[in-house]
Length: 87
Image 1 (cartoon, rainbow, N blue to C red):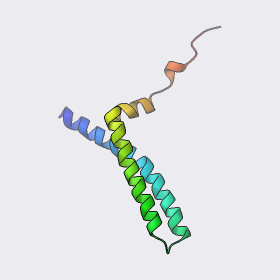
Image 2: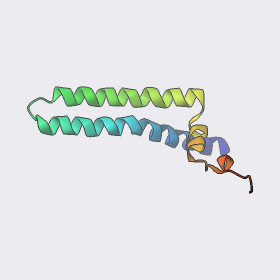
Image 3: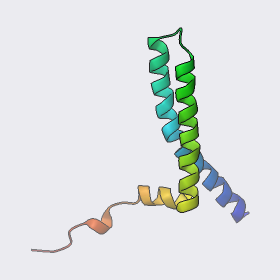
């Protein structure tokens, strides 16, 4: 049961990492498409590059750090860096 929960959490975090460059590519492709609606191949190429970049980035992070560890490092507070010296 615990392994299933861990797998689901890792999958959700992997998907969130994948979405980051993919959504940027979607916005850029939409701008390009609406500026020139006759040319649909360029936005499709941009979407493909964004999708591929998202997959490669998510896989690299999963292999190197683990998705949940990566997100834990991103979301932690900066309490360790506070100046604790008193005057």
